[in-house]
Image (cartoon, rainbow, N blue to C red; front, side, top):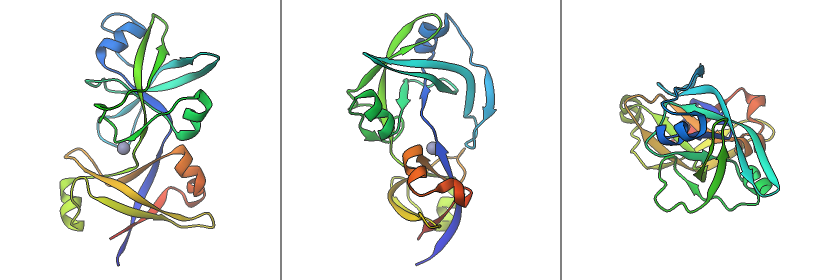
Length: 191
Ligand SMILES: [Zn+2]
């Protein structure tokens, strides 16, 4: 067995929006304003935020991640889902065909309903990195987090893309469970 040191990054809850939904929430032909670039090429955290509304419960300040996509999606942790009293499925980002959970999203100019998922943990890598480590798209791998709360995450879905670079993405529940901030966002890819 071989272990390779890789960056492990945490995705906090956020929302991706289609242009159509962005227009509903912020006004016609609205353009997002970049707050900062994210690690994967082209992705950015926008300055704009929205609110999630559910009877008696609300999540304010949900960050929009740009650019706009063909279909909107809300990405939450299990803790968020429990807080909102909803049952959100664990699926890979963008695989929304069978998702039946929706939440109402509120922006300054209006509201819309958007599908909700708990994103499946995954490993981004470029075609070159995939070749080097003999990784296949959709393959499940394990990543070990070191430390006194360390643990091994299995079922990490390998995603290969020309714009990707090697990084494992976990959600806040997963990161908190293993004290990821204490080990400065590093893990060992188990090959
Ligand atoms: Zn990712």
